[in-house]
Image 1 (cartoon, rainbow, N blue to C red):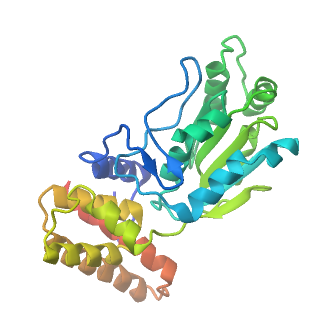
Image 2: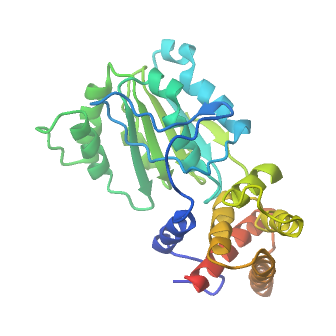
Length: 308
């Protein structure tokens, strides 16, 4: 359901995210990409690995991934004897979860965490007890039946105490929801993705929009070198129009695959963004740079809904 400014509900966002990947979100070996080596290799049988697959059109963001990977693998943090928590911040649709998944699929990361990768995608109203209980069972304990998140978290601290595992807490809206997942010993790492929730004692990493080159690569991946000069110019302008936001780029690519021309999509997006800006101006709201980024994503969702 859309509000009058083009807002969308979480379920619709999820449906459209799936739509963006219906044709190009195929998974498999995609080799070395910058500082992250991604393939379909899983840890040996019996080792938990809950990270989602990485899309074949993944475009690395070395401006943040290199530093984040180094933090996860740094030996001095393990020697400190404390659990290290890192947090990826950024707008919705900017690629936080994809970056976290790419790191989890990196063989060096998997080697550093031989006891597995655990993943929980929380959202706005998470069932914390269910996620924590699932981790307990994944670790092989089917007898313990916690009735509260606190009890589950306490038990997980015992189970993870001597392990080396990567614990990913994805899509956090409330910083208090992270606390029950801080259950590892010094051999574990906690990686959080969130839009704005400020996680206490976490090492922050801000994920911004893509560079023009990264955005163009993500948008045109299905066609590679098959675009005409005119289409290339239109694709470059379209990527700029949606603010180089990954999800907006994926939604745009999905529409072109569905038969919408580059020229038509560019015109429609520019008109929709102008419409959203006008609505805010009518309400007396100032159009900030951050709001313009939201407009591009909302405009992409609106056009995708109309063509669904």
